[in-house]
Amino acid sequence: MSVTSPDSRPQDAVPDLREQVRQDARRVRGLMRGLRAGLAAGALALHLAATLAATWVVFTEAFPYPAMVPLMGLILWLFAAFRFFAQALRRHVAAAALVVFNLALLAFWGAILVDQIPGRPVVIEGRVVARPDLPILVVPVAMYGLAALAIAVQTGVSWWQRRRERSDRTG
Image 1: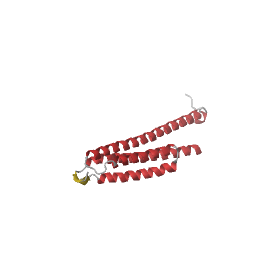
Image 2: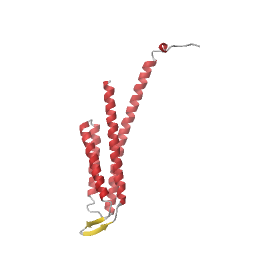
Image 3: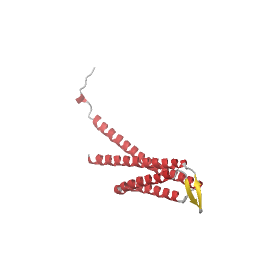
Image 4: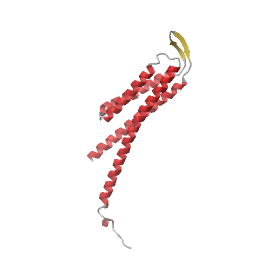
């Protein structure tokens, strides 16, 4: 039986281990980029689905100014898309400002939609109509909330990844 000391190991094992760690780090960075892109796509898809659901509700029920809902949904979607474009172009200050603005706008829009759930008298074509409760509006509100969550998580993943890349370059 042969006994070897820790100092007698082959010198080639250390570089192989370093290369393996580098390869693993590249894989993790690639997975994080995929996660970041998937969260961005998911947030945009949830925005679109929420807008379509809210639009369907307001055009099938007695609702004053129903065109406001799809237009606001379009504005929300565009601001989210602008945020992701700014991030892709590495305009970090613009991306940060847009994420704050987009999350605030989503909260405001969610509050407006929640306010529309209880029934109320509305004026449609010059007549006052009693609109029933619209609990179905909870669905688009929840979808907008999930989109906001996806944006927030994507922002955190992006921040973490940018910080890691910066530390990898410096150290």
